[in-house]
Image 1 (cartoon, rainbow, N blue to C red):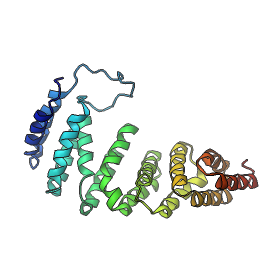
Image 2: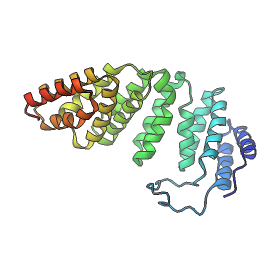
Image 3: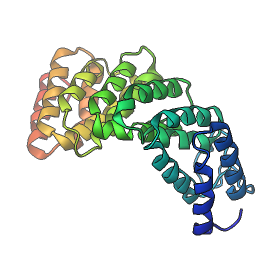
Image 4: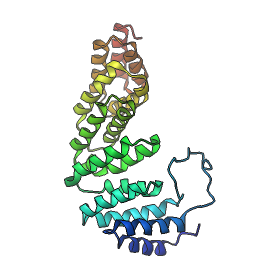
Length: 269
């Protein structure tokens, strides 16, 4: 793996982006850059992180950042060509190519929301390791989360309505990403989407539910506590009380005592 020379990398990336409107040529050029900068001595597990299931060239992060920066700039001028390139990159079936595809998708304007959501739905439903799926959702939804949150909530809702746990987990992850956006204010929609899960408390979704509850409690402790009290009184499922107990530490003292009192009333504390 050669040392990165920033100026040379910028030139290589700029030349690559010249083929932005030719997906086949772009993918071939990307392969060459990945081969040049890839760490071919790397062995999965050396960093202590679980190895990716996708083939990877293990390039240093600055390489992919430079390419992503340049290709996003080109995408702002021609979103239609960018969508075609996203498809070609995803079909490459390599870790770096797919990360670049999701970053490119997340840079597209809200006018392309339907095409963005369609691709993210297809990609996520194809499955894969949790960390990778979370990354492509975070990157692929960047513009929608910030500029068209209602569209991102539609996607979360479609996954949460699924009968398949992996898709429900994806929906929870979208909600968590939305709550991490300081400008996001539509908490009532999030409450509406998670309310049914608080009453049923599916075992495989509990970690995701607790993460979302913690984020909600930081944003609006009073309203979140009210939601939990409603769930406690509407459900005969003991796991609803368990969820509430696990979430207690996220609330300030006054709200915390109120929730504890509610738990005692229903025999959950």
